[in-house]
Image (cartoon, rainbow, N blue to C red):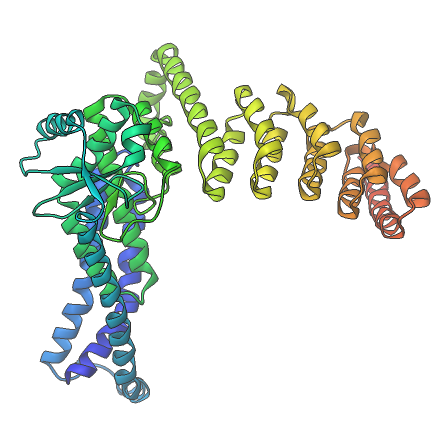
Length: 493
């Protein structure tokens, strides 16, 4: 078989081969706990290498032999011949498109590599002697034998490692002036962990694999998992050196405000290349999830839990409090709106009363309406701890209509009785936006036991807006029918 045909068939076979490899990795990662970062990293890295080896082996095997023929029925032989006849004319085009993609990405990779090399020579300055001494001390503790330089850079915005044979750690000026010595030490430890693990070289090989297999989404997913677990491994080494996971988490939060994109080959401690900051911080400070156990161990586990109930409850409580503090810090300081929104969502899930004041401040001050609406939903989770009163104030006074509408919806969920009927009826008449009025009508219709039907009937007859009146009438018909059917069912029972 010709080289073009063998390469084309190898690319086609790689579609199912890479998908199968990624599915296998996903199954393994579902079993291995998140704390075992080294094992998870090894599995992901081996899978990525296998993803390159599989199509390479397929192509070599096909090129070395003619089209494989084995014992098969006449019908199978005919079907195989038809498939070959249909696909083989397209193989040169498939190979041509693949080569074009590889060429484009190779230029991108080369430019990134050159840019990374320039980082170590562009706008750099010596760091203070205390910083160099800290680097030497940390290198000894991490058993980094290669000489490592540390420089202040006016180009990077987050700490970064550049180079493999002669690695250089670049620190932004803001890190030297805005971080405490302890926070700077843990970030230096993270970068030294990259040096110790030869991550710069591994990242280069990984980028080459991405370039060759750019067409398959599963490859990008596995590669992303490699980067995430790589950062987790370095996080663990940094925490082992500094001995305080919360100190390290706070250092990451401080650097998050300075985050900026760095060239692809620069490994950063606070950047997004190695996974979301929120996920990394939560992994460090959140309580360790309980892994499922076999049924035959249920008795042993139950006895262990009973014996350790007192101390275990105190430990989990302390960890939960620390996790809440971290989520509050993320929700208030992270620049990325999506990350803030996720932090607010997790904060609502904790149902910790200490989150009430920060959530109210986020609803009032955050400049992203998606984050504000997520904070309103979180207030609904804290309705019994003062969140209900905050929802009432938001529904009445917030300047954004979509946020007021969300608050109206959460009011119906937070208050099951008639105490909220008057408020919803007032909003349905007084709010300046029709969408908020209709949400109030919808909430009145959905109240339990028909508590809002009286107010809904009044709105259906007297509201000045015909659209709102029609919405109220429609909801009234459906709600009345539902209440009647429920009453009949109760009588029959």
